[in-house]
Each structure stands twice: as C-alpha cells, then as structure tokens.
Length: 116
Length: 113
Image (cartoon, helix red, strand yellow):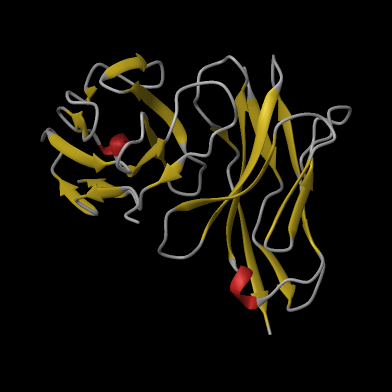
C-alpha cells in the first residue's frame, strides 16, 4: 500500500520567503508527526497531531513555524520569513493509533529545504 | 532532559564481519527503544524495537537488547552484508510522555566487499 508522501521533495527559498510543506499520511492513520533533521544529525521533534487536534507543538523552534491538519488527514507545515538556519530536511511520520503502546511511526521521504 | 547517545561513525566493515553500534539513553521515565535505518535515498524505516527491560528486538539478522541497568540498547549483527550500508538511528519514546521520538545523531555504516 501507499506510504507517507511528502511534497515538494526539494525546495529552495530565498531568505524571508514563506514556504509550505505538505504531508500525506498513510490512509486511516490517526497520529501525524513533523520532525526537523539538520545535516548530520538525528531528527528532532517539531509537532504532533491526533486527528485534527494539535496536541503537542513544543518542538516548534519559533512562532515562524506553524502546522495544521484541518481535516485530520493531510498536514501542512508552514515556515514564515525563512532564515538560513531553517535549512534542513523536514520529515513527516504517521502511526495508526493514539497513545498506549510503542506503535511504529512510518516516515515519509522528507522535504529538503535550502534557504539562501 | 531525555536524550540518546550513539557511537560516532562512519563505521567501515568488511562483508561478513560482526557489527556493534552502541546506543545509550537518558530518560526520566520508562522508555520504549527503537532502531531506525535510513538507506541511501530512502526514508527512515523501523528496524526493531523493545518495550521493557530485558526485551530483545530482532529483525533481518539485527538484534538489540534493552538493558535497564546500563541504560543501553546496542545494535548487533553477526554477519553484515554490503546491502546493510545505511545510517542507523537509535531512538526512545517515553511511556505516557506523548508520542514523540527522541533520536540519536545516527551512525553511518559502510560495508565493503
């Protein structure tokens, strides 16, 4: 079956531009996560949705970062007024349930963002 | 805070060699532990997991045992193949601490003929 898909796969932005990154989770998956992966580092948690509710946004680095999942399926991560330090791979993951038990998170291929 | 520490790479091995990638963790609660693998050009994939002390996760010839006394979850494989070349990430998830994963920095493995 189809996995998690993300678009665009690559994005080059000029400093100060706004960008929007899209995630299509596995159909029926309740939970959706966004992570940021800097070059040579492990992914770092940004935010978590359960259906359309954003239950944890503690990892968002600044108020320039905003995520939504209005219908509990597709999610968009928006970065306003991009800065060079925002350059990273942005990973989306989904899992079938909510909490309780070590459910696997299924990752998309990521969007590589380069801010010039 | 919670954290995961992995041995630095790259690790370069000959085919059929024994592999160990060290992983230790710091957590305030009782985490579940995971190994993810990222093959070149692909997304992260779950390799194996363990949910409580002394559990052993295994998959594709890889194994890791949850050691609470040493707060470790070392990844091992008895005989690596060229196709195992990838970046390996150790991660934890706190029970009752939300669902987010906390990752280590990753260890690149290169297997040569």
